Length: 168
Image (cartoon, rainbow, N blue to C red):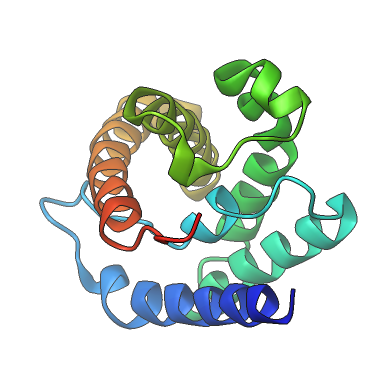
């Protein structure tokens, strides 16, 4: 268990550093910006205590907000996907989730892609809706959500394939 805690702490810190110092400076055409820090939420164990998980997700989003001076939109988006994660897990994995036997490294590509896609889209819709906070700019929100989501999903799926743990 001690190794797992160190793994999660390391993942938390590395994802924040990569997001803040590298990926936040990528902005293709005004719409493409990958947000990979949510990998921490995606890969969290199913059995994690809900209050702790909500707190850690809030801290994750708040840290990104502090570095990006974005006023709490990342923290809110992280809290929303953390709260909705059990629903998405139940929807995508069904009985495997109910019996808590889901490991993202052991599921098929289609299920993994569905899980990542749903949570990334939810995150990005919340993020860009709060960032813009103007219903008259719904097309801008939709464009940013669509393009950034696709880019984020591709990058996250590559990360999941490249850094898959061999022992699980």
